[in-house]
Amino acid sequence: MIPFLHIGWLTIPTFGLMVALAMLVSFFVLRADLRRRGIGADAELFIAIPCLAGIVGAKLYHALESPSELFAHPGSELFSQFGFAWFGGLLAGVGAFVWLARREKIPLLTMMDAGSPAAALGYGVGRIGCFLSGDGDYGVPTSLPWGMSFPNGLVPTTERAHPTPIYELIVACAIAWVLWRVGAKQIAAAGKIPAGKVFAAYLLLTGAARFLVEFIRINPRSFLGMTNAQAASLASIVAGGLLWLRMRGGNTRSLAERD
Image (cartoon, rainbow, N blue to C red; front, side):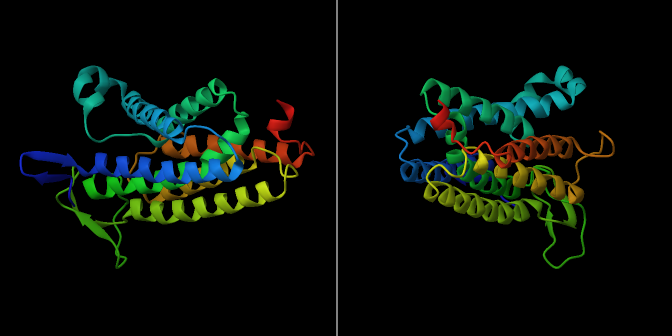
């Protein structure tokens, strides 16, 4: 693995490099979705602020999962180059996205629909940063031919393990494609498919994907035999399911029509 790139005197963390690439990819996807929906929002703003908020939220959530270590070593816990929790990033990123939509007076669910494919794909690209840095996000040992060891990672292991970040990238690409197609049908239906359906599908699909991959991850079990990420994924699935049921309940007017 390659935790750092060394170019002369410059040292570049590969995790940070892939996070930057994820932001760039998300920007182009969001800009394309906003254009096809006829929304004149600033895509750069809607990517930069939620992504930065997501990074901070992911780090804080991870640190708060082990409060004793946080209080014992606050500096290393808060400013280390690994240790980010997906659910903390999701909460902070969505919160920032909601705030921006309200500030720009854009119908909330319409904007959440537009941002969902970008969020799904950006997450997958960002996961390659975990893969390259070997920060402990790999899976349990496996004898499968594509199992990989991470002897030079930030959290090294010489055992061949499931390369779970690669799995997550593949699934994220598939989810992003599905969300993009749902969005296309929503636009073509001209208001007959309610705002929020793409976002509901995002919560359901990404929550299910993260819940399942945790079965082969090395994260410790805590709540009812689940990892913290699985418990958070269930919350995402429930929220997405409730929103989806609301869409099917006959409330087919878009949020834009109601505002």
